[in-house]
Image (cartoon, rainbow, N blue to C red):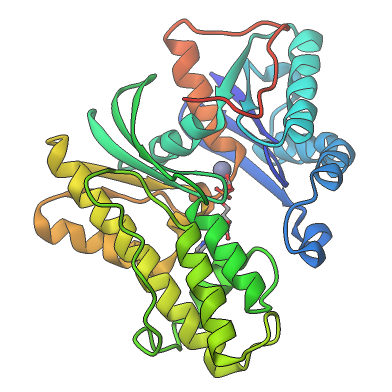
Length: 333
Ligand code: KG4
Ligand code: ZN
């Protein structure tokens, strides 16, 4: 079965073609250069760029998969959660394709897409497993018992981990998105130079990252360093210290949740799962007897192949949508 997946939930315009679980193409067109000067995503710019680009990105996905639009058997489109204007562009476009080629459409939750990215890899887990989604918009732990059976057991009470990376990067004057830059800088920094409080909410699988962000702000003030204009050695050491505490919290909560839920497998996904320290520390969990699944970096960050694979599994379970499908900025899994 040929599936055309669409994701326009935030700032990336992405269209993918899958043959069942096999990726034929996965085009991600990044809008970063239009947003970075504002230090974050500007929703109005994002939806306008999606409108400008969606057709070209679709043609590119079809061409590189070497198929024609009429060959597509199923349209899988992300309809939430995300920026409402951005979601609407992908959704309306997906509905128009479905109507014009007379093929079914299935709406996919963006978070379900992130979890199912692992099924695009050669090696994927059997159910049940634990999944940590850690991205710019979400930091949540799910128990996954089957396709479509997700139980949230913990979530951030304030900022998502990726959001904290982006905000700290902004204070350091590193531009947007901050995660990859902090990741790179941290490689040369001393993680023990500055001590930051570890935001560990005891007795719960929930997270909280806004206090850590405030602690970084206070450190700038205490040291008399202007925000947005920090010296290079401070940038490196702070990046390393910040990344260290975030990764420690994520790994410790994963371990706690695996033990409490009596699970032995974990899937870590979402943009922050591209972080090199997190990937390294996650692999150390293997030594404790856990199986660790980390989709490739390109499949951890937003992409339409993850939406297509989740749509494929929904369709195989007899689930499809209709042209009344609506976009939802807030859409729990
Ligand atoms: O999943 P994603 O592409 O979009 C959302 O659904 O949010 O995640 C984007 C987030 C951004 O906050 C970005 O800074 C972060 O993922 N990110 C990283 C890394 N690469 C991307 N954070 C830490 N280290 C990285 N290497
Ligand atoms: Zn995402």
